[in-house]
Length: 342
Image 1: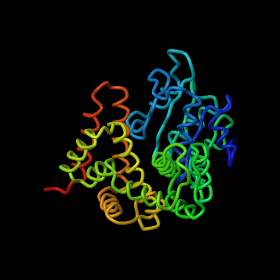
Image 2 (image 1 turned 90 degrees about the vertical axis):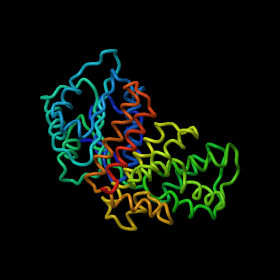
Image 3 (image 1 turned 60 degrees about the horizontal axis):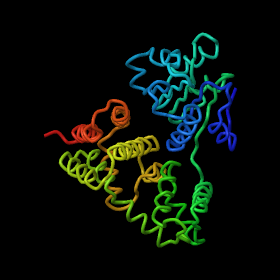
């Protein structure tokens, strides 16, 4: 039974013990789930995009082909090295839980390691229970950081780049960082880039400048138009973003982040408190656009949108087709789905 907590989690994901073969990473902080899954996957397989040793499966893949997980785990490495299977779920999944139980009982072969990313799981979850009860499995919980943890993480990053945080800016920074770990890291990176190397002290004025810039970026314009059902603007803003040098992959990932925000907003009650906890904009036009998009995308529809965005990024990396064409097609597909019927 492996249920790591506190600092042991960070050590485990950076250097997973060889006896552990299955990892279920779950919790309400989707950004922290993704971050830990990414670090763990990189520790297992240095190249996360290696088509020979890394297999990625989604909830949709498992529904379409119930044997997909068993087949992927039984496949042997063709080129040598550790095999890795990554599965991204929306919540509990009894079928994956059954496979873990069969693996623990010696009834399911595993030539590689399995990393499962999912949302919050209750104690009654079959998937969580299978990972917690197994001797070769680990259940890794990802709960939201408190403000002190996030500010501490930020100051550690600032010091590494020769920066410091003004005392009167600490409280304001905590408010900006609240949400999930991935969004917090994004805001920290923006501040570091804004100040530049050895930029001295980060002040309240710097925080205000970054907040203003973040509310109306080119990426926001593209993604908000697509998820808001504005087909014409989605196309226009996409072309402008490409002309400005923004990569198609960056736009697809921004789309994934916004989709995750909308899903968390629904899961957390779809109110003002949920806006803050989901890391969504809470004031002015950006907040209005977010709420408008959230009304258009129910929990079931947003899960499907996330699957589409994920498949687009995978196709960009593996198909050889032009990334700009694949990303543009996905944006327009989602915009048409959200657009009101004529």
